[in-house]
Every structure is written in structure tokens, then in C-alpha cells.
Image (tube, rainbow, N blue to C red; front, side):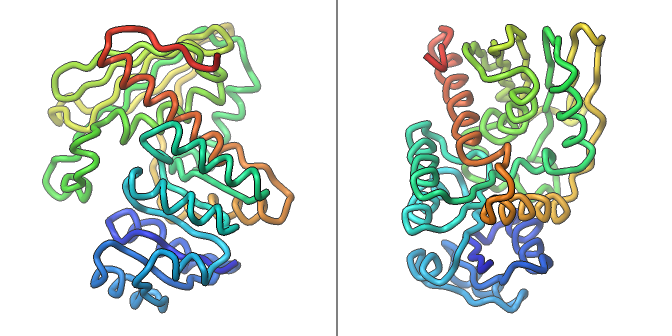
Amino acid sequence: MRFGLFGTGPWAHMAHAPGLAAYDDVEFVGVWGRNEAKAAELAAEYGARPYPTIDGLIEDVEAIAVALPPDIQAPIALKAAQAGRHLLLDKPVAFEPADADRIADAVAERNLASVVFFTRRFMPGLRQFVEEAAGTGGWVEARVDHVGSIYTEGNPYGASAWRRESGGLWDVGPHAVALVVPVLGAVTEVRAMVGPRDMSHVLLRHTSGAISTLTLSVDVPPAAAREEAVFAGEAGVMAVPPQTAEPILAFGSALDELLAAAAGTLRPGMDVRFGAQVTAVLAAAAEAAATGRAVQLGS
């Protein structure tokens, strides 16, 4: 499958470009970026071609991979889907639920394949845990703490303008939501508060009746950083095993699913429709935190 890559930042360098280049059944055709010099540099590193226009790259490929901020990704993804291209998108799909829904609708209308790259969900250990937890059932609660800092020395994401503006809710929040929803069910009600250092505290009520608690930040003091997740219920307390993210390995698994979906042999669990559901939950949390009111979903 002929792929075009949109984006030239740290994540494109760490996951997308090497992942595309290493995958046997993919032809890495070209790169588009907002900085033409960076696009040329990244393309040259992998024997691909830099493209000066979005439309030009979409026209020359069968699928796109995107490593761009959500507000830049969304219109590119919609344009590519309307042109009949398969989508491998980054999280979150978009900031606005309506934008994410439009992309999902375009994919469905054209029977395209799509995958959203919730990185650690594509690691074998976490994939197995989610399957086992969902099969176990009987959960009454979950707690996810995804708290750290991207502003420590050497962190490649500290200069990211969209992360500085949108904080942990939109950066690490997608990972937390993508972990609890497959186990506890879709979200029906959202409450949220924001504390110091952009610490977002989110309560989600799920269709199963369970409630999950998410604590999210990318700007805490290093001594306060932690990454923990547990589910509790009739089976007891089950902790999510620690996962080391291996971006290229995870990206390869995402490509596996996308190509299988394009061949009609798999329906990915983390497709763009699922990504749109995650966007809706995050937008509801932002609204709940701003207004102090609960936000209902799924009505």
C-alpha cells in the first residue's frame, strides 16, 4: 500500500517515518510538512519524496499517516477520506466532536479502513490486558493516573504549542479514555475539575454503571509524576501492568490492523469512529470543567 506521511515533528521521526519505512507491505511515498525544509530532510532520510502541497501527496497514495496537531490533522484527514484514502491518524482525532464525526462519516460512506494510533494500546501486553479485563466483566470502577511533565530537560514535546495550550486533558487524556471505554463501556456522563499545574480530574459514568476516575497532567513537579491504572470489581483489583512504549513496534501493529481492515479481514477496535467517541468525551470534560456542570453523552 502506498503511504504518504503528514508531519515532521518528533513523533513523525520516532514512530511514523521509521515505522512506514520498516514495514514490508508499505511503500513510503512522500512527506508533507508545514516546514518544507524539514519535510525534505525527513523524506531524504527514508528515500521518500517531499511534497509541497497536501493535495499532491493525497493524490499519489492509497493511504495517509498523520503526525500533526489535532486542528491541523482533522481537515487533512477529511480531505483524504473524501478522496478515498485509508487513514492512520494520531490521537486525538480532532478537538471538535463535529470535525471527528465528519471524518468518521466520510470513512464509513466510502468503506475505507481507519486506525487511530493510541500508542500503548498497540503493545502486546496492554492489548492482552484489555481483552482479558473486558472478558472478565463485573467491574464497578477504574482509576487512571497519567501524570507527568513534558517540560523537563530533553523532552521533545515541551516545545509543542498545542500541548502547552490544551494540556494533559487532550495530550494524555486520549490514552486514558481509550483504556477504560473498551472495558467499562461507552461514556454517558462526564464531570471534571481542573487544579493547579493543569491537573485535570475527570469522572466518567459508563454504560455498565461503573465509574472511572482519570487524573491527567503534563505539567506536574517531577516528584509528583506517576502512571498507574487499576480496575476493581467482582474479580478483585486488577492493576494494569507497566508498559514500555516502543513506538516503531506499536506503529507496526497499527499498520497490521489498517492493512487487514483494507483487505476486509478485520474491523479495528480503534478506528476513527472510536477516535471520534474519545474526542466527544474529552470535549465534554473540557465543558464540564469550564461550567461546573455534568455533561451527558449518548442521548
